[in-house]
Amino acid sequence: MTGAFQVSQIHPIHPFPARMAPSIVWDNLPDNGKPLRILDPMAGSGTSLVIARARGHQAVGCDTDPLAVLIAHAWCSDVSSDILSQRARSILDKAVEIAKELTPEKAYPSQADDETKQFINFWFDDNSRVQLAALSHCISYVDNPDEKNLLWTAFSRLIITKKLGVSLAMDVSHSRPHRKYEKALVNPFDKFLSDINYIIKKAPFRDGNVQFSPAIVTKGDARSLSFSNNSVDLVITSPPYLNAIDYIRGHKLTLVWMGYSVKLIKLVRSTNIGAERSVSHPVPGELLNTLEQMGDIDSLDGRYRGVIIRYLDDMSNVLSECRRVLKDNGQAIFVIGNSAIRGVYINNSEALISLAQKRGFKLASRASRLLLESRRYLPPPNSKKAGQKMQHRMGEEVILRFIGT
Image (tube, rainbow, N blue to C red; front, side, top):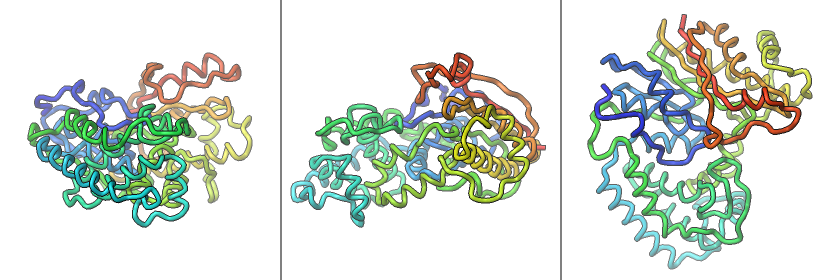
């Protein structure tokens, strides 16, 4: 079933914070000659979907982050090198012509409101705005959805970088952008084709080298899945860390060029799992019991306790939905990291085990995996209050395998 694929051949086509390690997915997917339906309900950039497809399974997934859905779709797509290269060259040629007549005063996405324009003005200089506006205009008129997603992914790579990008920000790829430059270090037109070529080179399903079923990636919420009961053979996912990585914060710099307003992006950001908001409805007693297993929560003030309770409520709904769509005796694999809030260690993995057991799952195995410091997107806390024990725990992720009972 694996064909010519090896896990070492799977490379991302776009930066993404705290991406699930491909080896975890590869090692936990069966290779017994029978294609299965594999679900990742919090798919992120699509690692689990790419690996599942590469191993011959039917991969389905969703995410609430519109840029994550786009990247995952592009990464899972069948790519024709020649056609995509020609399309990108045509897009660039048209954009260059449009830019000749486009003034900075008009260099915004169509329908952008005043708040969105102010955001764009803060993060992009005049030259980048003109070139990005021209490129985004041309990409928006591409008819083929796979080609359009791949072109948008190349466009986004211009912006979401660590240092050398077309915005005035640094650390966008780590989702903690801060304005660093007075002038962008890169011209969008100069780098667009090289980013397309990078995507072509790294695309796993390129030029007909695989005949497996295409992956299906949609915008959707893991707390309310659109899949039928008992329709999935295996769930594998990595939930967002509590209070750890604000994915949308960096993605906003690309999404505004794709027609999303700042107001809409704020709404998506505030409703994501792991967002720093308290639960707004009465809390079931079982969540309060689970809260006690997570650490010294009583030392936190009411606001942060509310944030943790909301996370538990979200994950309780995710687990209920995963059990609903999973076939009896099917497996669900969760890769979870632990967190720290104001120096207090938060044991997310223990909470997940407790919630899962209340939602019709039985814990089959638990394993820890150390994270190399060079691969971490967020370092463990370094305060004296944190201590060595917390620093060690924050440097690992826990792989939990459940069986649906």
